[in-house]
Image (cartoon, rainbow, N blue to C red; front, side):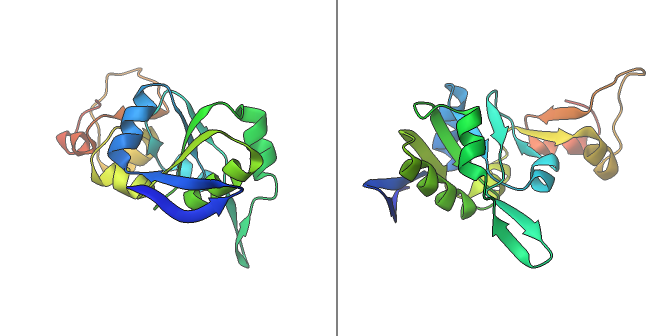
Length: 163
């Protein structure tokens, strides 16, 4: 993908595709999901180091920027952390990445295409079990208590079994 035309205090936002993002996430980069809490709870990237801090909130008047976004990220991450920023389609994450670079974060990249491209490429997801059950009846051992399931291949859901 490469650079995108948004500059922030001398640093240009670097956008990478989901394939590159997946590789970086697997090597220890933090995945910062900037979607709303509601979007995140419906399913998200399967990453060891994942944080959900919304960049915007839904209000009756429309979406508004989270005024505490930078403060919340600073409380969860160091400016030296290696961070991949993602959202639903890759738009909010561009602006969030720009803000983080302006704030002095050193190694921040935008994941182009967002969660939609991640799903489209059938990369591993974390989906709340109650949503999976609503979509596909699952066969699970009695007494199994879990609230989230990792789906390595989203098409596994069609096999009617827990991964």
